[in-house]
Image (cartoon, rainbow, N blue to C red; front, side, top):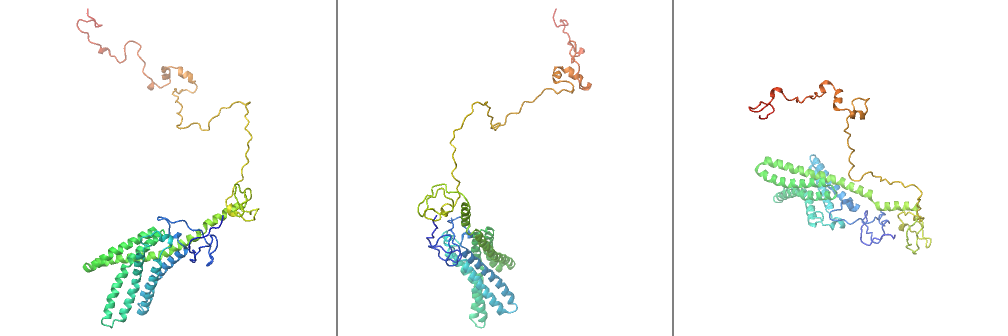
Length: 420
């Protein structure tokens, strides 16, 4: 089996070096990473981030890490601003820059195998641009706030910057909605369906209750305050999932490392097993000189040209069995035996044997035949007096007849009912 040559442009999994012209199983000339076989084709309903190159997964993990540090930096800047306003504002400004950088990284184009699927959210250029603009609104908001503070003494510029900063802050809050939708789609791609649905719910909550908060603040400020609380809770859910996406990306990398080179390890294991014994059973020509390798041991070299044929015989084969063509002799001197099937019945089970309704003898000393010859009256003698049947009448008179109930004779008839 000749080594597979990469004929199309394909980046290295570690350093993105173009591997065209190199062979599968070799090493990358740039970073020394092993060159693996190409993954199977990805269909529209399959393929997760585990099928993406590790370099891309690392980039996604770095983007979420930058966003996480941006959130932590903003919180730390708010605490520091209590003691020093200028220092706290600079920390918040740097944190917003980290946030924008992380959003810019995670919204980058996906690998070509996945970009061809044209996901309406992850692979749409306009959607990715909208998410990047939403991520940069926080940086614009802070810059306008700082500029408004510096130009507070100017009569026209100060109020204008304050109005612009208010609009930018509102747009920054609204921008959390497309960011939530995009991160939810990334979690679906990471096989975290629960997190994806939670983020979609948070996006809907920010949309609905945000509108209610703006309306209710003008009518009923009390209800508007609680609507704003719901918006803040939904934003906290987004921040929690951003921290969780870093862990999800780490699990994806760990899974890829465990499965890296799995097919190569299986092939090598089979080849090592084949080299321990067995011979080539079929007609297998040598790739170099065409010599028939039938009958030679596995994993050896061709006796004609000396080239190794280990790739041609990766699987062990059993030698051809020796056929015994001796005719079978029949011995007719023995006694014929009946062939009984191993299965006693097929289909329904046979009917049970009939029940024996013969009377059971009451005395252990009496034989069954003698008990059958006895009359029912003889059996009654063995029973107590209360259980015996009354004796039958011996005369013509029946026991149920009463002498006083005799028929009354009709006039003109004798006792037998005859007329004279």
